[in-house]
Image (tube, one colour):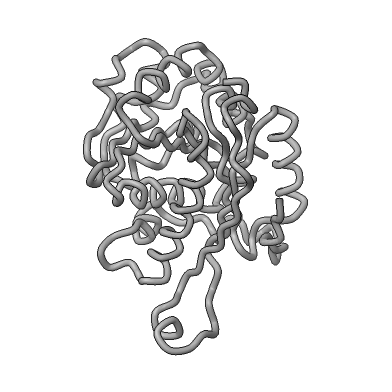
Length: 262
């Protein structure tokens, strides 16, 4: 698996400066006015992801990153939108039960959501927000619980995914950064694999190596990497005029169900 796409950040103090407000982050959500090169980047990533999942039964994918502020939540949402644009039925679940943002990006309530489902306080259907975009449904995080790791490691997590699977072609899950907490690794038994977000000029090699080591230790499967926020300075013709952000994608070979023990 060739990574070769992360660069050293200029300084650790640069991290707080790169944190976007929710209003700013909403500007990066795909819409009719999104620049062509960005849309095409996501279309390419969608194709690669679909091929990676073509040999598995559970088309359930976790999105994560090494550290905060690397764009995992925005990219998870944009990939869900891109998959849904094909006519596929897509569910997005916000399982970042510590610092959730999907409800804010989409301007919906999180009074009910994943935390209230997993704690038995509401049913799955009560927590679903339908059609946040065409063909895309969302389960927000719900109220922030005092015990997120315990909720995610409970049998109710597997039951939630089992309930949703017959109704959706793809299920994408937003989870906390790997180097902050181990929450994403608690889902390995229920998913096809992980899409790992790398931010250009920000993600450090050492942070990436540490995160990948933790994923490997927990027997996780990395489906691929998304390199985001690349400034495009060159190019000719159409792309020179239209490009602002560029996205690179690299996917590993898909895991079969037998390899995953499912």
